[in-house]
Image (tube, rainbow, N blue to C red; front, side):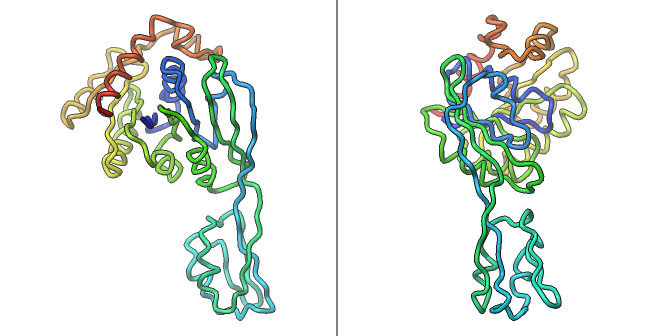
Length: 276
């Protein structure tokens, strides 16, 4: 199965969960949170391969260009703008769709490329594989890196550590997932942002369940919402000083606190039921 782990916002414990889930299941983990990947900090792997990812952006031959404006009319990201005497290119805004070249009547557009980030391949300290991507500073879109991670991911079971929220990166990270685990926290912000991700998963028709991290006596609002909307609670990770201490030391919770492994095994059992 391809199991996506996501959250409505940062800081809810998505990587805390996915790193422990990978430890217990010994599955391939791919970290698609390309703006701030941190799974490798916990898995403590050694990089065996680096793959550069490139984006293409248009180059205009002004000897052929008639400044008709069709390329600018086509581009929804304002990456190419015909001006009075020349065509202005904003390479960082280009999404590499190729549309401007297709609509150009004089074949004045060709392509240049630049590196937008890298994909790293590692072997974790518990001998499981890890893939993660890192977007270069200043780049606007890292979708190509996420697609590259998916194309390189090979394994019977794959865990996808998704970007937080409901951005384009999250949507692309979720593509092809068999099941999604939505990690939330018992706070007003946690519930509010969780509702947005619930709507996204329903729109994408991906089955999912909820894991409550930092669970305490304040879970009632989340439990009420899930009950009213027939959403399954897969499990709870308790609010714990020991968990916080282990996390601050860069340790995987399921490894540092072996008693917690049963929680992750029970969650896996429930998830596998959806695959049968």
